[in-house]
Length: 424
Image (tube, rainbow, N blue to C red; front, side, top):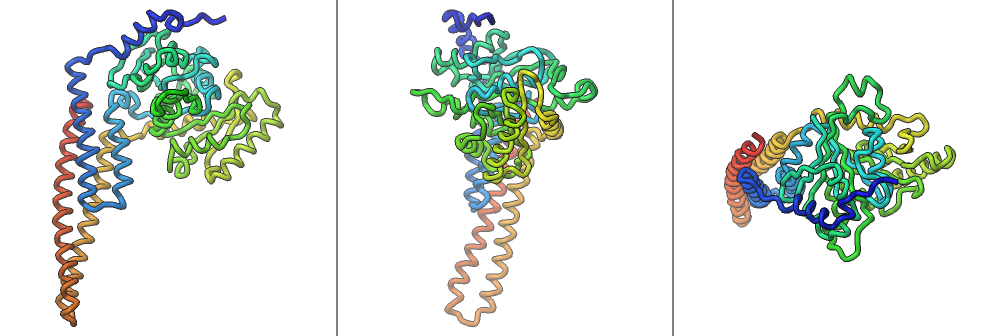
C-alpha cells in the first residue's frame, strides 16, 4: 500500500506549504518586472487596440485583438514562457479519470513523475519539460517561481484543493523539469533517445478533467475553466478517452471546440485522440470503438487529418502495431525547434498591422483621386456637393490613418523597449 502524503494528513504542514507558495514577498527586481508586465499589458490591451479602432480597421480588429491578447498573456507570464521557449506545448486533455497523469507517466519513464490514482487527480495544470536538472516549481499568479520538493508538489491534488478551498486560484501552473526526459520515452528507438534532441523541444501539459467542476465554486475557478484556459495556448493536443467511455461524447466535442476554437478545424493534424486503457477490450471490440470515434470526428468535420489510436498506459503499448504517438511527438518537436519566441511574435503582428494600415491609406488615397476627378468632370453641378463631402472625408481619413500609424509605431517602440529589459 503506497505511503500517504503527510501534507494531506497534517493540517499544520499543509498550511505551511500554502504559506510557502502564496506568502512569499517579491524582491525589488521582481517588483520591477511586475511593473513592466503591467505597463506592456496596458500598452497592448489599451493603446494598440484603441489605435486599430481609430484607424477604422473594424474587420481586422477582432483577429488582431485576439492575437494581441494571447501575446499579452504570454508576456505577462514571461518567466513561464521563457522555460517553454522553442518547445511545442502538447496539451493532454480529457474527462475526469481518463487516466491523463498515468498516460503521461507512461510516455516519459518507468518511474511515475505525476501522482496517479483516482484519489489524487490533477488539480493544477502541470508542465513536464526537459531541464538540466530535476526540479519542481509552482508558478504563481503573482508571477513567482516557488521551488517544491517532490512530496510538496505531489500533495497539490484535488483532495488538497478541496480541503483548502480557494488555494488553487493563486497557482497558475506546476512546472516539473527532468534531465532524463527521454531515457524511457515510449516507443522511441535508441537512436531517437540518444542520437537526437527532438525531445528537448516538447513540453507536456497535464490538465484537470474538464468535467470535475465543484458545486459552490465560482466558474472561473472550476476545472473546466482552468482546463479551457490552459489548452487555449497549446500547439498540439492529445485528447484522452477512457475505453470504458467508448465514443467521444457531445460534451467532449463541445469542450474541444470551446477550448481550441478555430484551431480544431484549421489544424486537425495537431490533434491526436488516444483511447486509453485499451487492454481492457478485445481486438474486435477495440476496432469497433476506433471506428465509432472516427465516425464522430467525421460528422464533426475534423476527421480528415485528426488521428485516432488505442493505447494502454500500464503496458506502455500502442495497439495494432501503430506508431501514431511517437510520430505525433516528433512532429510536435519539429515545430517546437523552429517556434517563434515572443519578440518574433510581436514583430510578426507589428508587420501585419502596419500592412493593414498602409493598405487602408493606399485605398483612401486612391479614393481621393477618383473623387477629385469626378468633381472636376461633373456635368451636373447639383451632384458636386455630395462628391465634395466624400472627397473631404477621404482626405480626413488619410490624416487619421497617418496619425494612427505614427501612434502605433510609438506604442510598439515602448513595448519593444520594455520587452528587451525583461528578456535580458
